[in-house]
Image 1: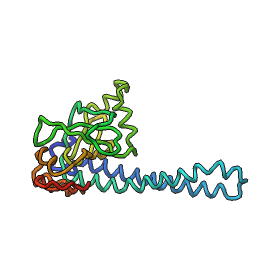
Image 2: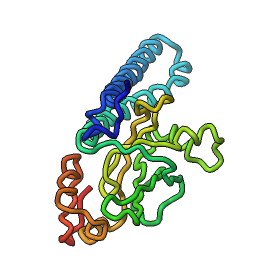
Image 3: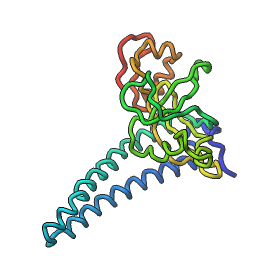
Image 4: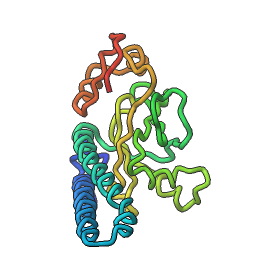
Length: 229
């Protein structure tokens, strides 16, 4: 019988989640090997070829290292995912507000957002955003207003682990709803994120301590010093 994800004290206590994270890491590693091996193969093919052929292959020489660098960057993201999964439990949520529009209160680039209830003040909603465009294509196609009903239904229910005041990890359920897929980190990028904002959001010392365990360095709610992300 499948284990209910919300029954575990942390998301990492859910066996299907551990398998999903391991699969995410494996695919990242395979992609890194593929792009690196492809670039080496392209280099071998170009040796002895006419100069005009080499010029045709130039885009591949440029794009291959770029994609390999992205995969290396994603390894850092997988470690951060692990820390979130080991700190926060899963919440299975339906009809979470989301969009691709720019949020005026968010600083920096954003590539879509989900809005979650403040755990300390349920009458307040707080937005978390996709801070990088890497890997957001699957999500954005389903978040777009003109997406068809079939695509939209795939994110009608989402799994969320985190605290919207600091950071979160979002996932879509598998077809059977027993495991997460498409793991992706959502970031808190509200402008002027400082002690006053955390105080207004009801962040307590224990909440801040959990945030620090996942790599966020928020200041104490009483402090007015701006936090470092």
